[in-house]
Image (cartoon, rainbow, N blue to C red; front, side, top):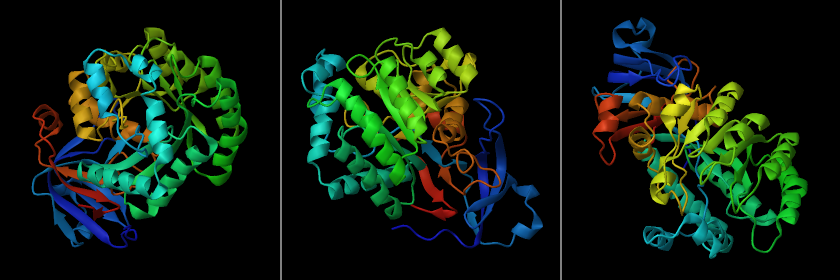
Length: 410
């Protein structure tokens, strides 16, 4: 159950290595401090820095010891499909036997299979499953989670998924950000044009009127939607106050980087096949690129070239893409390690990508993603010496304690 926000002061001392991850400093600017402390009041950080410099007025407040451990901002998973019914483990076997993602989708599997399972699931069962996942994500140090729809694919079922997220908000300490992804694929009972018209003329206005989502997303890919469809759907969302996001260039080069820049997308995700001109357009537009290494790993395809994006000036977030088919894991620390080994980010770049930059990708950079005065007191204590050692010597879970609003959650 959700506790009321902390109403007292607090202090975490004996931090062996603190990564504050401020807005300045670029992709690798984590601003590490050794032998540090963090102080907060009413769930908001008041001070962070070397423990020897701790202001005298804060030294007598209730104190917790980090025991020399590493401390990082609460991790932000800026791309998940949190609410769904069923799993697709059979497709894992089929892909290993040589079938492609598109082959499986054409046979009735993929997103449309999860659509059928999700439509059949009771809302209470969807809530229970999502809450269980959030609890386990908290234990990994994840404190903020974006939750996309996309498995309802009808007016009523997409609203059902958004309402599941609203129902679990008061039951979890995790911070949740909702994204409408009705334009995931076209459901089998509709033709594409009629489905797009329903999204534009009925669903988006209803979602906006009820305040159920902040972002509007679309999957631009063979077998899903086109660039022209994206302009139509994202323009409709913007007219109703929903900010644009994109799934692009996952399975082939679809000019997704330049599309993201053209529509002013907050983020463009996947980007495995994005060309240099797409990267440059995203850099100029300030669009965050989201690296999703689990999807590349499970689909056995080339990963996003994170190094090229960073060198071209694109800010890169790292997320799990947690879903029941192509990325069936919510282990964000593991995704960070894979972002290093597969996408050539350094450990510091990956950490910044799952904190400050990920917070920007979900529009919460003024609240979370860094350990700075004025931000929420969300952080994680890890049994590691520093970020290089953490992501190099990977272990199942080194998170000892997770804090949200200055209160431990595990």
